[in-house]
Image 1 (tube, rainbow, N blue to C red):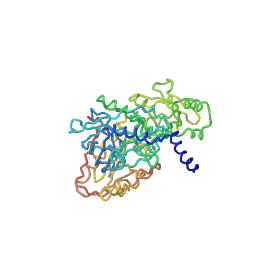
Image 2: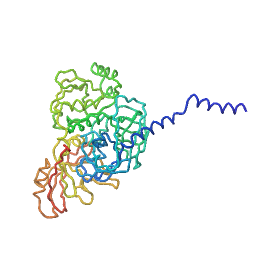
Image 3: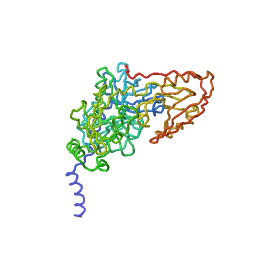
Image 4: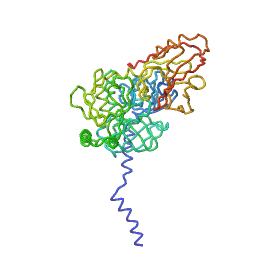
Length: 495
């Protein structure tokens, strides 16, 4: 009998010494959900034209109101798309829906802002989330994601901060380097654009991507900088070096270079940084024939950056966000790099900072069930080719001759079978050389006026990481109601 009593008392004593924490944890998540719910929306997008690697179609995601007075909503760029022909609808927790418009997307980071008119809402009073401070975040912190997970509105997922720094997946087209937060936990589809809350109820990150037990979120500082400019009634401008950076782990540094005074000096600064720096920034790719291609080399290790020649360099460590900030500040001027290359320190490498908007998809044309547009900087970096030429972004299987030639085919789930593997640049139509959308428009206008016609087209065909050196000459048989192709310009200065 005594044994039974002792066995009974042990769990009672344990419960007194180590009280159950589940209720407390559940309480803080409930409180945040309750306060945040009026600020979180479901976004429904219908994209008619796909630019870059975007796929036309209908899809949904999550957004959060960041400015209730102006009706500004934050979400992912891949939720809104970047093409000009789209419809956006937002539904609030009250059940009311409203049309929205895209007012901004970042050239390479995965976030965008859309806007609704609060005055047109009949019975919904929207509130805004509070954007928090990334610097207060620590590894091991619990955070909360709230979003439209698998079409279930306002679903919650508790996550844990595994690593305060991860670089964007640099093998993705249309994206470059980005400071992400690595979170442990599972999030299902439809949660794209969800805010990530800390225990104080402040948004410290924007959900970016995830797979199985790994989730990644964009640090909120990128968002706060752009929002501040938009709230002033201005349109944000960004500097572009036409360079993609990677951020390998420090252990890889010793694989290629033995310890020396330059590396040791950098490591000393890295160890004293808070939080500790575990990665270094390296040049991943450069657009050929760009100004940077004459000064930087793939594999260069960034030891510092400065705005004036011979100034003391700013220690960057692995801070990709800070690097972007410094580049933006030098828009229209130059920025200077200090890099470690082949065992040598190279000082005062001057790179001109150009306006990123001029390297976006600025004009496009839909013709013969195919979408053509100017080659933008992200795709040029991804393929490792110079800017210029006409990119074939969308070809409808069964209708476009380009679809069968380029194998740009769709599955029922709206993903290409060879997504990210194959790209093609149009070089020539008949005797017309194609190096711009104006050239393309001129060539199409010179073709026969018949509804069905044949013409020769010259392509450069590329596979990911292995740019094809061959050119394919093919005969295309177009069937279309009109052979008129009027290039449409895209204005990024949205009002």
